[in-house]
Image 1: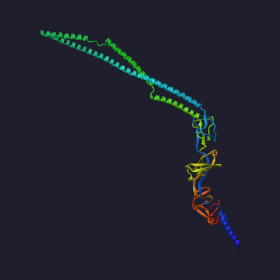
Image 2 (image 1 turned 30 degrees about the horizontal axis):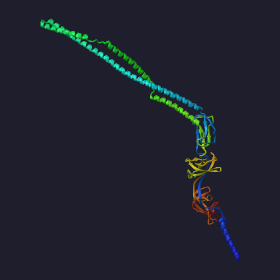
Image 3 (image 1 turned 90 degrees about the horizontal axis):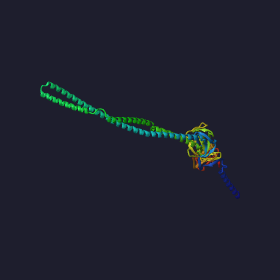
Image 4 (image 1 turned 90 degrees about the vertical axis):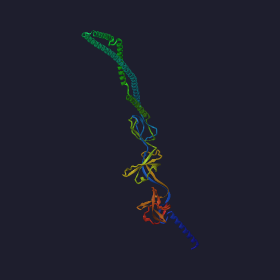
Amino acid sequence: MGRRRIIALFFIIILAAGAAALLTAFGIGGGKQHEAAPAKKGSIAGIIKESGDIEGEKDQVYFARVSAPVKSVDLKVGDLVKAGEVLLTYDTEDLERTVSEASINREQSEANVKGQIDRSNEYSAKYSKAASDDAAYAQLYALEREYKNSQEEGQYKEDWDINRRRDSINSSIASKNETIAEKKKDIAKSDDLDEIEELNEDIAELNEDIASLEKEKASLPATERTPGEYETYNDTSNWMEDITRNWKQAVTEKNNYESAILNKSQKNALEKQTDLARSREEEAAGELEKALDGVKADFSGIVTECGVKSGNVVTEGTPLFKIVSDKDMKVTVMISKYDIGQIKEGLRAEVEIADAVFPGTVTRINHVATKEDSDKNKVAVDVHIDDPDERVILGLEADVTIFTEEKMGVLEIPYAGFYSDDDGDYCYVIEDGVIAKKYVTAGIKTTDKVEITGGLSEGDIVITDSVTDSQIGEKATYAVH
């Protein structure tokens, strides 16, 4: 073989070896070619996808605060309203009339109560004077009664003493007359002149005593009142009659005035009447003030219910309309028992409405499951739409993605290369140019990739197209995508 031919063959061998290496690297030659991907480090997030209807998180039903006719209201379901906007006005004519009448009633009540209390105070003053007169006349009568009694008692004692003295004198005269009579009998019986003379002397002395007693008896005053005493006694009697008459009048006036004086309970009752009249006036004024204010929107939002029209007469408490905030909106999704354990409040979410995607946050997990049309119990989870705009429309269906867990720098493979059987999770790999089956430990799973926590190393080639156990050990090449 010539030198040129040897050199040519050498280059052919070199080129063939290089071509074989290139074909192997790019999945050409060396067995059936498979689509594959290397196990590599990256980030992964678990997701749960569901759909639900857009709802308002903040709503308010407005009720009539007064009973009155509706003057104007121009609302339809679906209208947008702004915070502070007047949504409804009332016809206040009847309420204004009620306030006027309540004011008049209050003034009349105050005047009536004041009149009764003033009259009661006047009677109280008159009662005090009558009570004072009663006490004064009672004292005067007692003094005059005492004076008259002393007059009568003095006259009685005086008469008693005179009559007793007169009786004593008469008794002494009678006793002396009896003694004279006895001495005269002794004289008639005696023959002794000396004895008779002595007896006559005794009789003469007794007669002198009797004469003195008669004179004393004659000097005794009469037992009747003198004209001066009678005049004094009569003046006292007349004065007592005047005192008695005036006293009775004072007692009568005192009783009459006392019955007309208001007691504490009666005054309290009158004050309560006035308080009630004031309260009714204040209540009527308050109702008028509320009616004049009308009904204003507490926040910006969307009218979802409206059951009142201009001209309707509403009573306090009548539902008027409902407004749902257009800034606080959510989507409620139903989560199965398989996924609910991965959901917690605060998780990041995305809400897709048509072609728009809005960031969201899990804000509430209902702790009571409800039965869906599929006859399976599911849990309602609220996802708040963080920054809604005019494309977020109440009642529209939205697709929600909840990111249950996010990890950085984990080993991951495509979901298409992940399998499971009774023995566990596994994948097919190409090792040393042949197909092998490797059982792995999986972490987070998404629709396009799986976290591998054990069983694979970074750089292992995982087959992502269809493979079965029957192909294990076959030669294989791969094309990395």
